[in-house]
View 1 (cartoon, helix red, strand yellow):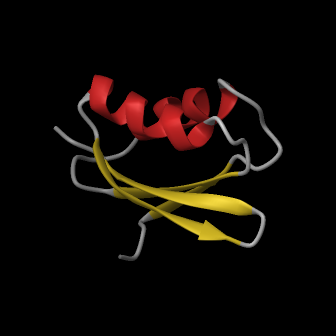
View 2 (cartoon, rainbow, N blue to C red; view 1 turned 60 degrees about the vertical axis):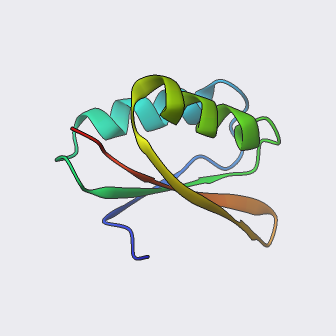
Length: 76
């Protein structure tokens, strides 16, 4: 799936990737897709937990060279 926006949070440690994601998602329209790049191992759990708690749609995670790419759709 192609993302509408990308947020590069590589090099940031918990909780910064999720905090930056939350801030950026607020500015998006419902249905837009954000791809978050993070290399913090805690992000694997944190991003999915955030989406569940905040009502955002977690679309999946891909392992890339040295980081993970999380795909999230903004819910209404």
